Amino acid sequence: MSAHGQQAPLDPDTGLPVSRVFEFPELGVVRPFWDRRVTGYITTSDGTRLRYSVLLPKGAGRFPVVLTLNGYDAGSIGTTSFLRHRTSMSVALSQRLVEAGYAVMGVNTAGTGCSDGRLEYTRPQLGQHGAQVVEFAAAQPWSDGKVGMVGASYSGSSQVATAQNRPPHLRAIVPGMVLTDYRDAIAPGGVPAPGFLAPFRVVFRAFWSDIVAKAAKEEGDEGCLQQVQANLVAEESNSVMHLPVAHPLRDDYMNTFDLARHADRIQVPVLSMEAFQDQAITPRSSHYQSRLDPDRLWLVQTNGHHDMYSATAFQATVLRFLDRFVKGQDNGFERDTPRTTVWMEAFETGDGVLERRSSPKPRWVVSRPSIKPSDLAIRTFHLAPGGRLAEALAPGAADGWDYPGAGVTVNDVAGTSFWGALPAEWKKTSLAYTSAPLERSMLVYGPGSADLWVTANAGDADFQVTVTELRPDGQETYVQRGWLRLSNRTLDDARSTPLLPVHTERPDQLSPVLPGQPVLARVEINKMGHYFRQGSRLRIWIDTPSQTGGLVFDTFTQPQRLHVLHTARYDSLVRLGVLPGVDGPPDYPACGRTLLQPCRPDPLATH
Image (cartoon, rainbow, N blue to C red; front, side, top):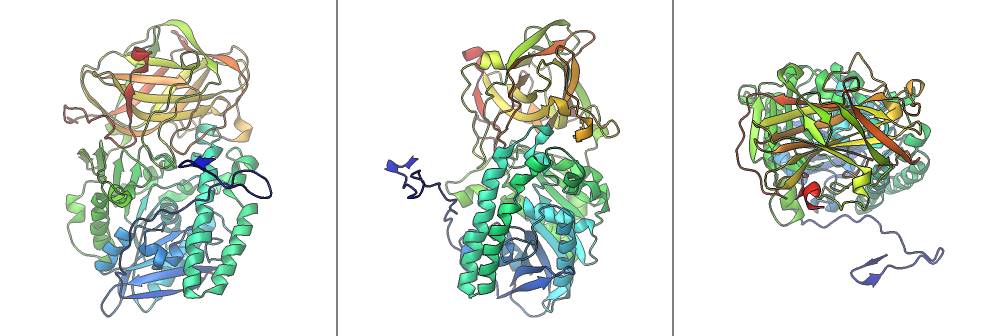
């Protein structure tokens, strides 16, 4: 492996190039913005010691607390690395909160960083410990007893877990980019995606071995250094990498990782953020928001990546939300903030990483008091002969494609936006169906369903359905994707809707196919918020799952010829939800500007 023209060093034992270690980028330095820093350990009821750090604002008295709980470096905030933005925390948001009079507190979860105990990711321990941390924070001499929580990703999951346990002093939460269920990341639709877990694990461990250990050395905390090493060793035998091997389907053990099951227990106000093209965990989050009390929920949705929580435009809303529900200020938040705000065609500016990370903002906004499934019109397109998407049933001969094939990559794990190259055999290994030019514009919103009647000869196969917009200028814009393992197609009829197929994913309910026997495979297309303009065409691609952001799939490999049917008896179709009453700007965004929705020249016209 070489970089910048230099040969990578060789490992003296193996003779192979040394693997590159994850390196945290240098993003500039800020000066300490707090008056006093407090550190220590919280002992939970089960005897686990959790490391914490608190940044206190200037002034005397007690302060409301904003808590972040994660498995990275939350318990070590305020050190040199934190001030250099080498942290899982948002330094900008932390500074905004401290200057607004909040104590900012970070805590490492069990088995991570300096905290001891067993690492259990999103299992019940996370929320049980989180609730005890909330009560600990409320009882401290620097606290006024009012606690809120913030953070994205792991820090978002911990909020959903904690709030389910209803700690008395928790006032509000702001979860973003929540992974409620590891099935959504390790096997979306039942298709294994081990390529996500490997880089996640590398970064996860790097926070302990680099950031947390460096902080412990600065502070002379020998006990922390020893615990970091113990946690690194323990992670080898308790890695998230083991989950898809030991529990490939949704068995009883995997169900304990699903935070969405008990989301209806959350009673505090919630400000939720999600990104439709989230390259790390998808926007699915088991649709936990639908289980929350709508009178206590505010939802911000956007196109874009896993770091959209860092946008200054969103963090301004976070501060007003916390001021209202943690401090208790009557600042008009309920009166002037729509329950659902959808950022449309969001983009970023700036040259440096920090500038780009904080800069995302919408080109325009759709806002509603709320958006319920019943508010959406269902738009149905039928797969038809000649690669057409038709408004009415158009029977014809089945279409076939060679499986498995190499699908087209879209975006990467870092959130870089691009279409990958077309595979050499793409015309044989994929199908495309394109609508006529749209007679009117439409905002497609929420999840969709591709209801495909298919045949397979090898007992199983994996599908990928990609939604794109073909613009009049010949550019094709990526919108969204969904995946399904054919044997995983059994539906939970009680929870499934025309726009949202919900699969049971249980090992006792697998459904392999017989050669040549048509079966209905409903593919969940992930949530989206995309404005298809009049004159554009809707397109659906069907092929083998391919890298999408950080999701890298391990598909069923037996070669075969698959067919999708479109007859009077076997009507394959796509259903999308359309939000009525939206009139967006008539001009298209410039290609390459909309976050994680790249353009490419129409392959069907140029090849």
